[in-house]
Length: 155
Image (cartoon, rainbow, N blue to C red; front, side, top):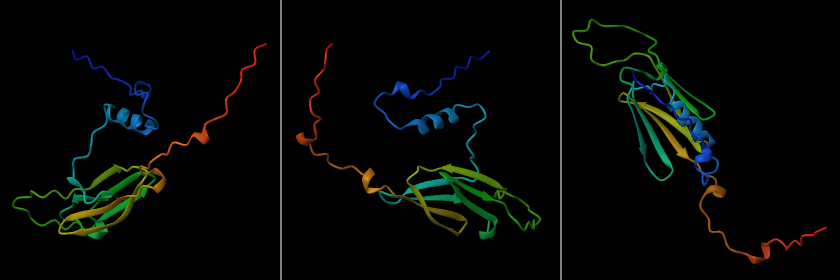
């Protein structure tokens, strides 16, 4: 008999980390028994510069009209289904071209710039568009901003 113990990700265990509630939800999802990451078709995520990424998906046998890419909130969904199925008589069939549905979760700052399909590789171009207000900046110490002292009244 196997004893499996599950742990609920609790953000109170990390008192110096603020705003990571969505991360907690993601870790909880990974811990569910029915979570199985999609392995077909294989994909790469390439960091091409400090703020740019390319998602490559191997889609041999698929044409432009066979692939549907949608972005809804922070979910990028890539669905592939070959519309015209003309199956030749295979002697050996080693290239899988079955239907697929892959979902990628994107950070709120990721923008999908476009996609291309060439030589059996679907490329989705992504940019991490961080607002200037969220980029690191120097905070100057200004004593004039200190609150005035408050006196306590004791009855």
